[in-house]
Each structure stands twice: as C-alpha cells, then as structure tokens.
Image 1 (tube, rainbow over the protein chains, first blue to last red):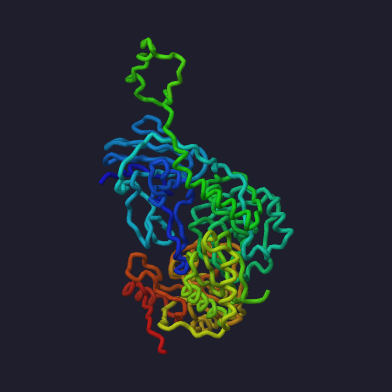
Image 2: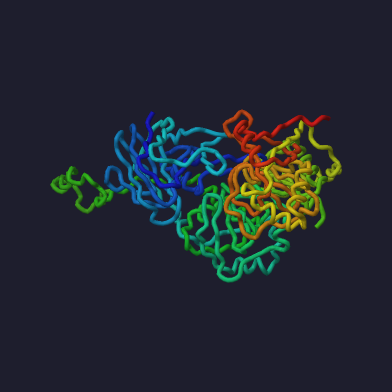
Length: 341
Length: 244
C-alpha cells in the first residue's frame, strides 16, 4: 500500500475528515477539519469525495517521503511546498513517485494547511470517523516516524489548480441570533456589531479568542446560567468579557452565555484568522443566513468544475533545460504570435 | 419566560426548553421528550440530544422547514404533561471512592467557604448526596450530576482553571461535573476519583447513561492509590442495577 512516511512534522498536525456528527448525546462534538472548505477543495482537485480524510497541519510544515506512487493535493493556509527541492504550486494537485520527498515550510498566511492523498488517508476509524480529537482520546496527533497510508486510489489527473477563497486574514463574520442572544440586550448586540475585534493568542481547534476594542460583553446573571448545548459557531462570552468563537471540536455543552452563532460557511475564516487579525461581526436574520448558507453549499458543489489545468510557469520548471524550447520557432508553419497554453 | 419554550439554535437547530433553572421534573421532561421526538421519526431530523432541561433538534431545513418543525414540536408538547413522566428503566447506581481536598483536589476549601461550611462539613454533605446523571456533555461520556442542595448553588469562577485531570469531581451551581478527560474548567475541583468514563475502543465506550445515580464516598489518599493500582479503569467504583 502506498503512503507517506513522516520524516519531520510540527506539534499540531492531525488527520481530519468531516468528523462525527450525531454523537452530541454522548458528549462528542462533531470535530473534523477546522477549515472544512479546504477538505472540499482538496477533494475537488483530486476528483474524489470530500468525506475522505486528509492531514491538517497548523503553523509549521514538515517533510514526507512517498512509499509508492501517490497523487497529492495542497490546500488551506498556503505554505512553501517543494518536491525533491522543486517548488510546488499551492491549491493544486501533483504526483509523487516512490522515494520522492515533499517538504512544507511554515504557513505564509492563515493557520491550517491541508495535505490530501488520492484515495484519502486510511488511518484508524474510531466511532465512525478518522478525525483525530486528541483531547477526547480519539486518535493522536501525528509524529515523526508515522506512516500515513493512502486509501485505494482509482487514479486520475493531477496538475489541476484552483483559485481558493481568501479566508486567511480575518474579515467579516456573518452571525445569526440564537437561543441566548436575548440575554445580552439590544444595545449590547448593536455594540457587538460595531466593535472591531483582534484575534487573541488563545486559539485552537476548539475555539478562537476575539479581543474587543473597548469594553467587554456580559449577559444578565452570567455566572449562574444553566449549562446548555453548544453548537459550532457559537460566540461564547467568558467571564473576562472577551468572546470565543467556538469551532467544530468545541465542547458539546457549557454554561457561558452565547450572543449568537456564526454561520457555518464563515467558520473557515474564523479558524484561519492568524493572531492579530482584525475581525467584525455582522448580524443577519435567520432567513438571510439560510440564503447565504445555501449559496455557500452550492459553491462547494461547484468546486470540481472550477479546477483547471495549471499553467506552466517556466520559473517553477526545475528541468527547464530538458525542454526543447526553440523547436517551434524553426517550424515554418507555426504562428509565432499564438499563445502557448 | 414561560415554559416549555421553542427557540432556534443556529441555522439548523431548535431548542425545546422546559425550564431556565435546573429542576428534577424539567430534567425528566427533557429526557422523555427527547425519546418521543426520536420515536416520531420526522423526515429531515438529523440528530437529537437532551441537555439539563432542554431538547436539541438538528434538522435539514430544505426538507423540514423551520415553521413545519415548530408546529410538530408544539403539537407534541401539548399532547401531555411532560413534567410528570417516569424515569427510564435499566438505570444503575455507582459507588465511587473519592479523595476530597488535599493537593489532589485543591479547591475543596474554597467551595466550602462559598457554601458557608468547614471542610469537614463539606465532605460530610457532598459524600452523603446520591446524585443523578442529568445529562452527558462537554466531553465524551462526561456527566453533569445533581441536583445538590441549595447551599451548593455557588457560581463558576470568572477565570478558567487551566487544567483538571481525568476523574476530577468538580462543583458549581448545585451540580457536580465528573471529568472524563483532562480539561480546563471554571468549576471548582473538590474531589478526585479514579473512574474512567470514556474508553473509545471498548465495545461499550461509555460508562454512564442519563438517569444513572452516583455517590462519592470519601477515602484517604493511601487507600485511593491502592484502588488505582488494583483497578485502573474504575478506581474501585462499583455499579449495580437499580431495583424496579
């Protein structure tokens, strides 16, 4: 079986898929990729199902060696990538041969990068998914020496590229009211939307701290509120008055009040906001939120159609000298002004 | 606010709440209403869960629009008095050896102060309480237990404790949380047990079910260490069926 041997890896890399929806009653959050859009992008590039698992890498990259022929794709927060020293395009699919080495540098922007394999990653399936949730004892983070086995790959084209949505530097988050929004009062909710936030230092796969410019926020009777179900996207106020936006690996229930819920389609923007990024919240009605989410879901389905063959960039062609670059110029029938795509 | 109450939860959820404070009847109502929603098998419902006093329903609004689901839920709520339903059968009673206080559970003194008791009185009060699994949440297999008496209605901390260990017995707002895994928390760490609540690769990964009952009897640190060695999975905890 082909796979990737991990030669070097940062401390926060783990295999992720779409997670484990449906286990809230056992206290298990759905988890899965912090940036689910990146899973869809990788699947589109490799023409396979977005349910297949990929490697999620936060911050620092690593080095990998192919144990057999592989198709790979790179999505999410862009990193400097190279195959045996030759630069590789991000948001693109590529081919690796046995023994070839893939190196990934630190992220250039954003937080979470994704490395996909044709056929997905066939790591252990626990409680219906391969997504690692280390804090809950579901799988473990990746370490040097590990092997990432590829699932069965029916094969297909590589050299595909995709223009990825820029979600790597903060921005505006659409937020809908939820069952505890009323605890905050109308003027606090208006001030919330008028406030600029900076992504704080405390952030992980469970949630992201947002530091307000100016005073913090609190709900009536905040410390005695009955613990209630938590949903991904919930914006929770801790005692300090600074909100956390909770991600898909958040706890399933908790007592800090939540002012609203960020739309699922904006959660990649939350997860990928680097420390110091500026963010704002924009209230949307339930109807408008549903319409925005419907459009985002349709865009996911359209991703495969947006993949296109990579244009060859001579600056990135390591074996430039092996190409016969002048043959066209001496063929009398050639149109010297035709574009060479 | 009047109860029961139906509110939206994000774009794809509804929350049916039976109270805004914990009560035994509201908790029972939530558990029973949730099983009724499951049994109704409405097309478009993707998941249900019972919290302390509410039922959460996740659904696909494309096949089951918000208005239609709300109407269904209202009809079910009106059909009977959900505050007067029996507890489910097949429950268990757990007796769990627990070290109160010491460096293993450093916030017993703080919690006792807030409840207006000495540490000795606090241990006597907490270890005499037979509590129920009110809901499971926050982490895999992790129970909220209660209710404890009103004297234990103490607030959460404003700052999070960076980490309590697996098996930590913590307290706030007249409830215990027994930690299934090491985690940060705003609840005060009053006791330490050796019970593993979640073992993902076991055939039965979850030790507890809502409705199970528990009692945390005090042991000395030396006895606790001995129980941990002899019984790493349960730390000496014993479960028995509750007679009908």
